[in-house]
Amino acid sequence: MQIALLILILLPLTEIYLMIKVGSAIGAFNTISITILTAILGMYFAKLQGIATLRSALENLRVNKKPIADILSGFCLLIAALFLIFPGFLTDTIGFLLLIPFTRNFILKNFFNKPQGVEDNIIEIKPEEIDEHDRFK
Image: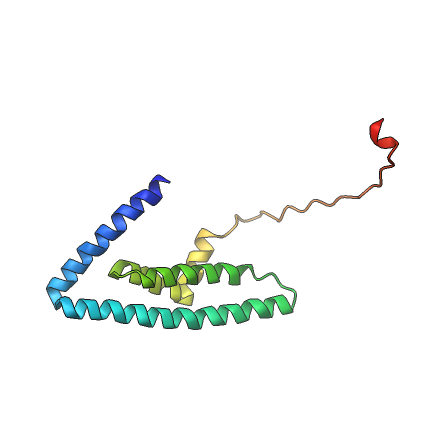
């Protein structure tokens, strides 16, 4: 909770600082143009990657494989699209990094990987029918 609040405060301040620095170097019009261009390009590439991820997930379902990686990849693409919608250079950079399959896979492997040697916990049971009279003994 406190980390989220800190991010909600620091992220806009960082974006404003970067906008002022870049705007003073290349001009206000160029800064706004770059921000709009990155949002448009990012959303276009997010759409293409999202469609490819959806197709991959459907193919995995068709061959009875779990589409866990595709679901996580789709979640990263959703986060990337949100970051690309927000105006700013830092959020655009994070968004574009999440759009690149190499960096997205690197992030997924490092943050969503289960520890080595841990197997899925499967409990097998043998159902037993209970007679109504035995139930209250």
